[in-house]
Length: 212
Image (cartoon, rainbow, N blue to C red; front, side):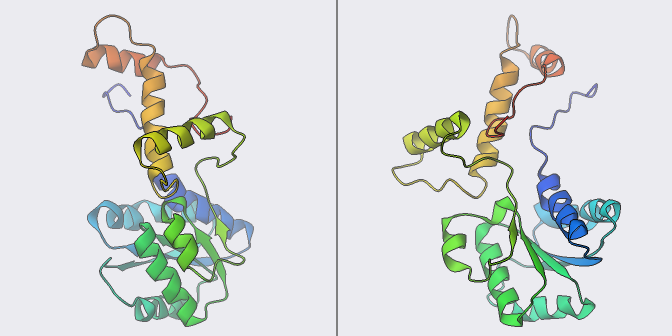
């Protein structure tokens, strides 16, 4: 923090730590990450994700697939040669849909973990092998939660009459609202130094869409 670097979201936790814990709790000793092969994700999956799995006592293999791959079945089949007890997919909803379809094609019957970045309306409508899968979330979708009601209202105001409330939209909203909450502590002129001071002095605050 002294270097002036603040993290508003911690995506690696949902990408790796969550699935690793699910596999560990299920007694799975080896798992595979089917990941999208783009610079923003591949380096993290190969260097950082295994740390979370190691800490959970799970051996992990990472299979990276280019997003424009039409049929991922051969890639998934190759990943299964290491006999993982669990699979998780890391990518956007389109990539995840194709990967989950490929997993279904292989007949895999082990544990599946779906990260929140995969989930949107099209994913849920297209994927047929979600029964028994664990779907993780970084935000509440409780219609009675005031934070979700506000998110819903914002999306319907600025993203059309029928907005997709899944995918990365909740996390983007969380980052923006968390930053806004921190900026309530800015005093005087808004400058890099005053913003940095407000972030450092920010008290414990309820996470947006965190349901407390």
